[in-house]
Amino acid sequence: MQQVSRRGFMKAGAGAIGLAMLSRNAHADAALPFPLVDYHVHLDNSSIDQVLPLSKERGVKFGIVEHAGTKENVYPNVLSNDAELEAYLAMLDGKGVYRGVQAEWTDWVGCFSKNTLAKLDYVITDTMTFPGKDGRRMKLWEDSADYGAPDQFIDRYVDWHVQILQNEPIDILVNVSWLPGPMAAEYDKWWTDQRIARIIEAAVKQRVAIEISSSFKLPRMRFLEAAKSAGLKFCFGSNGRYPKMGLLDWSLKTAKALDLTAQQMFTPAPDGQKAVQRKL
Image (tube, rainbow, N blue to C red):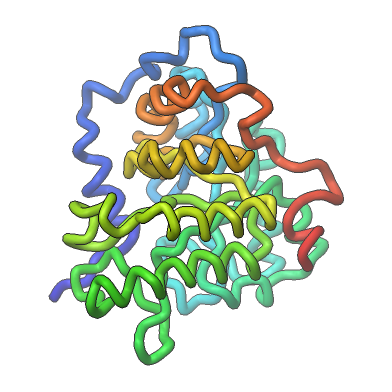
């Protein structure tokens, strides 16, 4: 079957938003107990100067993330060494945005020095690139992904979440609780309380925040309520490519339903407390 890039996958999903939503967030003008930030913005098909007017228009500060890891990861842009990361940081310097990366696979750290990574405001990752039966990385969002029997896959998938949370120096886990293919239609069947609890426990221990994703409308409320009860921090993310970044209506509505306060929202850690400094 035809393979689909993550960019193409997200572009197709974002198209469902519709042109009517390419305006200021419906809730952006309402009084909020915390600043409005989209920590999951990609510049794949745009430049920083193109997206900055959208930040102002939508009343949202942007956190820009570029994919980071080995060149084996196929994306429009992949940062793979200190020189590339330093150039990326310089490009965003003084633009009024947070500077982050989206870590790819489990070998990304070796591409960079700790000192250069520490210049980032934060690091995000997801679990959608998954070890196949042969151990090689598999992109779960592709139609060709063979993840096996769902009842066997889901436990391996939870283990993968825990492994990523325990071992990777990340600040935010994004696209949380996403499921491939037809499994998504049975979300509550697969995401049992026990499986949710394992992921939340690992996130609490590693001080990793959970994204409330407006692109996927995930995690669902039962997962989020358990995360809130456990004391996890939250952030908002659109996973937006131009011009879809900063559209956070679902995240905002969900945060209102959860009655989140400023203390429960993620903010980048001060120097010395970032995940790459604590864990490397």
